[in-house]
Image 1 (cartoon, helix red, strand yellow):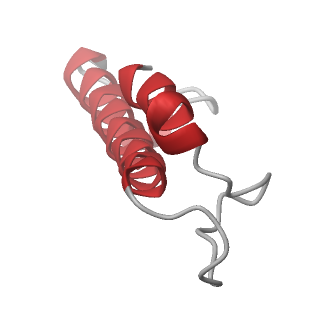
Image 2 (cartoon, helix red, strand yellow):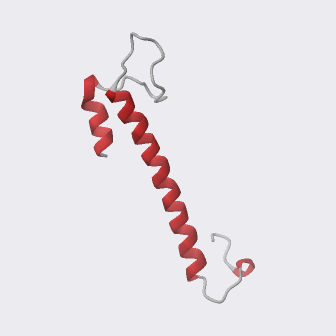
Length: 75
């Protein structure tokens, strides 16, 4: 959230639009705001991977004596 707010306030915003692609023309916004937006997307991807590993680890550790074939469909 900190990088989201920083990218909104730095240099008048990132100016990337709804696709979050950095501007390719020199007239567009560039600099720290776009860098913070890209870094924010990387942090969101890493947090998604960490959440996935946490979910899988919880399932494998907490399954007790069940085999993987006997677990419910959600797992």
